[in-house]
Length: 132
Image (cartoon, rainbow, N blue to C red; front, side, top):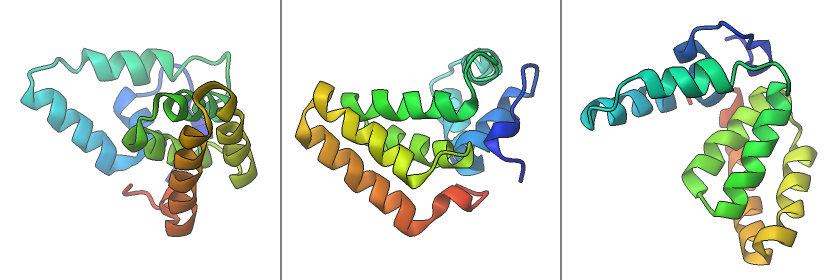
């Protein structure tokens, strides 16, 4: 499996999604959008336009996503983006530091929840499995 840091502008949006959040999560997104009759233009926009830009590295982009999702307390998405951050080259220490910094903006309960989710991700090791 190619790693998320290999993403380049112009890459296929579905492949970008699979590199970042895995095939299972990409399939779930497709099923959700299909169920609600949401056009695939959304996936094309997010993974074809936003995530394929080259101003930020994929590692930086995913660490930003981890920060935002932590503060917003969006636990399911946070888990997916911690996995994506690791796939893009972020270290355990970097993920933890980003989450710790969010205690300033979201409070300690949000920080503790984020660290708990990060520990789960690192202990289970799904960041290295291509199906997640």
